Image (tube, rainbow, N blue to C red; front, side):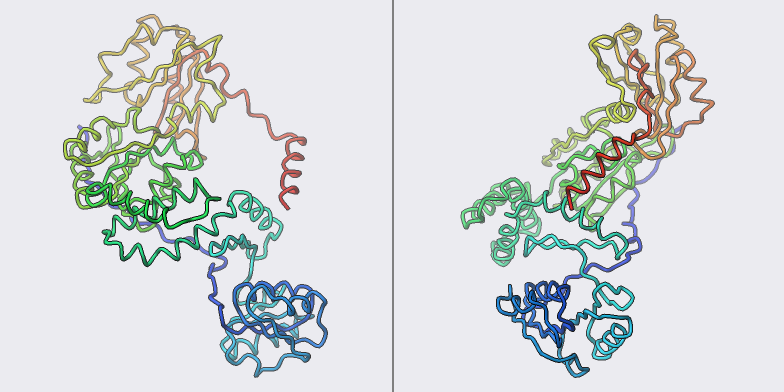
Length: 496
């Protein structure tokens, strides 16, 4: 008899250790102290000025780059003082940066700054730094800082180059528009759910039209769109989201956006912790897992919880392993939402069969060997072998069959399938925790597979694939060649 479980709220895990705390100083109109006149000091002065600081530079020798910067600063004024720094210079400063020749000078500068209560950075001397600059992607007011804690500056630069390519320059204008419109959104008479929906519409439009200049008509259209949704925003909604087979990199962009906008996430036992890391940290996460022949929540209880939360105005994400439309009980949950007049939408995901086949480089269909693909379940509503399996199609040598949730019934299924004409030598495989780092695979003729699974003691969840295409499993496991490594190195160098 299957034991019952109650929905269990899962606390958001604590942050892992941070080598550096990423913070952004507001320096507009504030004073910054910079010691040294080198080219490196000129770059730091440019950063400080661009952030709006009034930069006082203390140096007896000043590089041409620094003099040019003082003549035409990008933001705050840059003043050159033809002398060494003194302890009194730190009074009233918000930040201090030193270009020091040796450790003795660096220690003296850092000690004086700290005595005045001023955070300090000494260029290229992390032992004397309270903060570091890192690599910067500038789409101001959208600014991204990248730090490797000094361990791999070249790696940080490569990541910055990747982000520069990914982020259109137009994002700067849309971020500035968000700052202008925030107060107007607060005064537009929208509910808290409506305001969140406004920013979701804003974000979707900005991402899809990054080079379009934001206009007042855009603001008006976004407001009208939210008001046009009416009760749908006020009363919440449900989104059934496919989490894929386990590897978080197989999530779709739409799935990530749904998880980022959710108030509550109801997730299955099959959803990996790495996938949940993409959820909004403030979202409440509730395990409503159903495990074969193990502790499970009643489907009716899940439906009731889902609808109740949506009626409270929450944006509910029902997160399911694989694709919600493939043995995910999506039909029952859609019917429950419609009966309660709760808006419901679906975000498809990569199915377990697709993920398993991809990780093994096995095509599910093939012109020579597999003209048809079918998904079947290994157990019925009461947990027994289903009584309506099409045994003829299962025995068809030109069919690929993916068998879901077969753990307790697989031996009986194979016995019956062999009796109905399935060739005992038909290639087959079992894959546990497909696409995850701890994935395990057993490959054997179908007649031997039940025994081989038992010997391997595969952990759940398990998926079975049967068909001639399984002969190709495991053929693509060669290590990286020197040519491949060389190509990857060239790709990195092009980013720098």
